Structure formats: C-alpha cells, structure tokens
Amino acid sequence: MSAQSQLGSSSSARRVSLDDLRARKADRRRFAVLTSYDATTARWQSQGGVDVLLVGDSLGPCMLGYESTVPVTMEQMLLACGAVRRGAPAAYLIGDMPFGSYHNRLHDAVKNGLSFIAEGGCDCVKLECDARMADVVAAMDRANVPVMAHLGLLPQRVTYTGNYKATGRTEESASRMIADAKALVQAGAVMLLLEAVPADTTQRIVEAVNVPVIGCGAGPACDGFVVVTPDMLGLTPGKVPKFVPKIANLGEAMRDAFANYREQIETGQYPAPEHLYPMKK
Image (cartoon, rainbow, N blue to C red; front, side, top):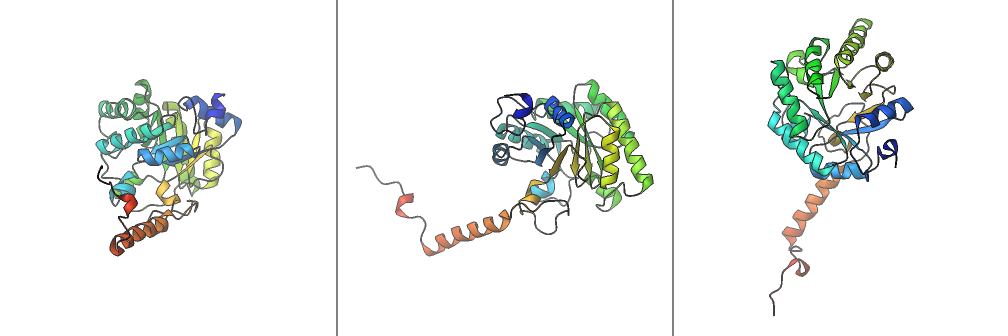
C-alpha cells in the first residue's frame, strides 16, 4: 500500500507523515481532521478513517468544564496527547500548545514544544500566532519541532478581545492575515490552520503559501478540514459554531441510555441472574 493510500485507512501499517499530507495537497485530495482527547475516541476515529487528529486545548471547555481554553495546562495537554497517541498509533497527531506555554522566553517555548514531541507522542504542535511570533516558530523549526500556525479567530486571546468573532473580513485585515501567513511559513511553519475566516481570504492564503492549510470554518479552498468532535456529535450543550456539520446527536442517545440504566436499577431489573457470579459446587 502506498503512503498516500494509507492516509485515511484505519489499518495503516505506519504513522501518517507530513509528507503524506503534502502529497494530498499536491494531488488536491482533501483530508479530514478531528479534535481528540482520549484513547477510546481516538481509536474509533482511526477506525473511521480519520487519521489526522488534533489534541486541541478545547479539551478545557469540552472535557474539563472550563469556560474557555485559557486555564488548560501543559500537564493536562500532555496527558491527553499520550492517551490519543495510544488510541490511534498510526495517526498524524497535532498537539495544541496551551496559553502561556510559548509566550515568554524562546527557551521555554522550545522546551515545551519538545515535550509535546517526546512525551506526548505528537508529530506537530499548534501555536495561535501571527507574524509577531515568527521568532518562536523559527526557534521551534531549529529544534526540529514542526509547527502548525493558527491564524484567524484565536480562542486563547478571548480575555484580550472579549469575544469570539470571525476575522479577515475587511481588505485591511485580510491583507494583514495573508502577510502573517507568509511570514510564519517563511519562519518554518509546516502547516496553517485558519479559523472563522471568509472563503475569499482563505483562497488568497492558500494561493500564497506552499504548505497544507487546514480550515475550521474557513471555506472550501483548504486542503483539510477540522471541527471539534463533541460539537459534531451533538454532545455540546447550547449553540455550536455555524460551520460545524450536524453528523449525529449522541447527547440525546447517551441521556436515554443513562435513564434506561437508572430505571433498571430502580425497578430491580438489574442485576439479573445473568449478571451474577454463582458459587462453585
């Protein structure tokens, strides 16, 4: 089986590589990306043919009950990355560097990035950044830590911006984002992620760079597409972003299953004889 055909196969004999993703871009074959936070979900995602997984700092709101991604720690991210790697050993795994882990000294940023590779089993790290952080990307590149640069809506900056909103919607902001994308790729970024960006702006960025571009509500021009898995599965309470496809409603199915279990307990249906361990004769 060729490297290209292995991508998207749950029975891949080896880990999906950056070269595989570059080949998909060159062949104009789009690929699926999903967020993942635990071994069990990662295993099912891999069996479903999704072999590019992002351990996002959305771990905070989705799994830990935080109001935003800002409180998520390195320890929590590395724990999740290791779990996902064990659940999907063949996946191309991207680890999201949490708030504060790459914003101070270059030495600390590189050290933390190396931890994602060595301890978390990641193939790449993701940074929410712009051209002002090109030196961080370059330092990571020198240390052999592949970087996905995240542009557009940046959830880690919610305490600064005060809200979540699309960017790149004016000619001025679109031109600035295109310049940021070029600068970050020149600094060594191996991929880009664009979140909540107009399709026209995305098209211009895709044409301006030679690396795979992953879209998260960024239009059809991207090479790959990612959404938050609990959003897609109907597990997120309240409103989800408009770009998330409604694939399933597992929240209601889980609620009904839990209610059924409770009813079996209350009515005495469980435990039944088949659930018991008999004494030996």
